[in-house]
Length: 253
Image (cartoon, rainbow, N blue to C red):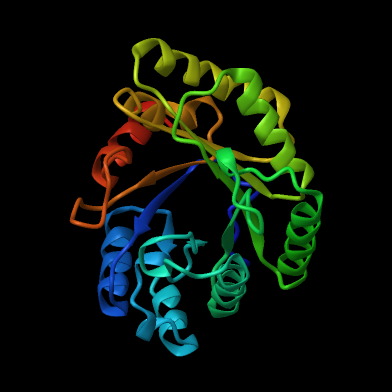
């Protein structure tokens, strides 16, 4: 059966892996699956470049066994200085090595505010790349990391634009630094479920982001992103895998 992040009734519990070496990645993946993760996310910007070979990366993805793999290749970290063309080549390479879902930034080919370009030439290149990924059997998540609160109208506007470009899943990360913003983000989840035809991953960062990340899947968010453990490469916001599994059980999802 083909691995997929689409057409599932149950939100995925996706354990994110961001480590320096292939061995660390394989160990982290196997441990996360043993603990109950139903999907794996691999962030290539953290992986040292000597491990970015077809043999090694294929072995890393194979550690996920029958679980789908979400693959990102963002700007920054060990990708500092890479062009967007090089980053998208990396996404295609990840797909070749066994990734299921690749993350295409909404401002790819034209770095822009809110990580969403309005340049028509860049958008045309994105759509062409999405078509290529689909022809190769891959799935596409388009992401926009804003990291600041946005009202419902703006979040929906970004999501609909990502959907229009051909994304299979849309991802928007805003912020919540007050309880009021946190509650508004929960309401935005409900509105996105009404407005979109594709699955969505709506998250937030900031002081009041935990509740949104914890219960978002009960309101339509397609997956939890979590860490099996915290270390020097993780960041505040995503919950621990062990906590997510308890939340999932409590929500009966």
